[in-house]
Amino acid sequence: MTRTSAPVSTVADFERELLPGLRRRDEASFNRLVAAYYAPMRSLASTIVGESIADEVVQEAWISVYRALSGFEGRSSLKTWILRITANEAKTRLRREKRYTSLEQLQGDSGTLLADRFADDGHWQRPPVQWHADAPDALLTNAEMGRCIEQTLHQLPPLQQAVFTLKDLEGSGFDEICNILEISASNARVLLHRARVRLFGKIEHFQETGEC
Image (tube, one colour):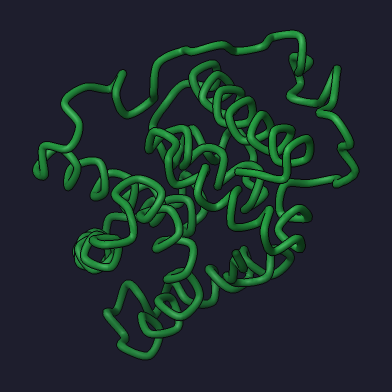
C-alpha cells in the first residue's frame, strides 16, 4: 500500500513553481502536476467508488481541474484543492451509479464505537491485544495480516475509508481532510474513530485466532 506524491517538504515550492505555467495552460506544467498528484487522487477515488471505476473518476477530476485552474485562488494548497475536486467527482459518480442514496450510507451506521479505546485526541487509551506497531501501515509488513487489513479497509463505508486513508495512511491533518471531503471536524473524527474500531478489532481477532 505505497503512497507516492510530491515530497512534503517541497510541496509549497513545487506548487508555486508550477502555478504560472498551469494558468497559461502549459502542457509540460500540467504533465508534471499529473505525475505528482495522480497517485493520491486515485487512492482517494478508490476509497469512495472502489477500484473498478476509480480511474474513470480520476479522469473526470482532471478534466474539472483543468477547466477550473484559472479560478484557483490559493485558499488551500493546490493538492488539497485537487483532492477536494476528486472527492466531489467520486461522490457524484456514486450518486449517479445509485450505489448509495444518503449521506448516512456513505458514512456507515454508528455501530459500537468502543469509546474507552481512544482518547479525544485520537490516541489509544487501551490498545489491542499484542499491539506492537506504531502505525497501521507498519502492520502491512506481515503479508497475511496485510491482506486481511486491505480486505477490511475495502469493506468500510466510503467516507470512513476515505478519512482513515487520508489520516492514518497519507498523514493528512484534520483541517485538510475536512477541506477535501467537505465535512465538519467532528464528523471527520467520528468517521475516523469508527474506521479505527473496525480495523483494529479485526487486527485483534487476527492476532488471537490467526484468521481474518
